[in-house]
Amino acid sequence: MPDTNKDKERHSPLVLVDTENLTREEWLEWRRHGIGGSDVSAIIGVSPFRTARDTYYDKLGIAAVEENEGNWVAMEMGHLLEDLVAKIFERKTGFKIYQIKKMFRHPLYPFMLADVDYFITMPDGTKPL
Image (cartoon, rainbow, N blue to C red; front, side, top):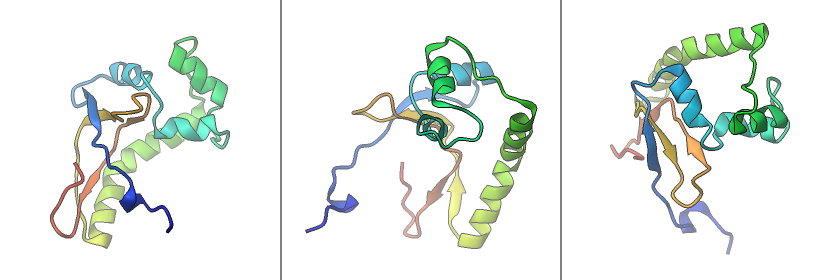
């Protein structure tokens, strides 16, 4: 029988920090407590913006990742468009979206972090968290 996700034990995430009132610098410092989704592409060598070494140095506080102008523009545009993209998604799919302004960590693997922009309400009305 194939191993499926439904057969695996589910672990609820733990809250690492409430992010709602953090400054950008405070938020970046909390991100250094583990590895998040945006770090993974650099670690496996497919990010056009960062290398695994950049991520390693950033996590250890040896050197913060410097953002070049092209990277800054792309990141700023992405940040500015997050709400619009979420609203488009909501309208196109019918899923209701909501935010939880917290950074989460895995209960068994505390280096695994998640700072999720939006969550969805499932069609049956349940929410993942």
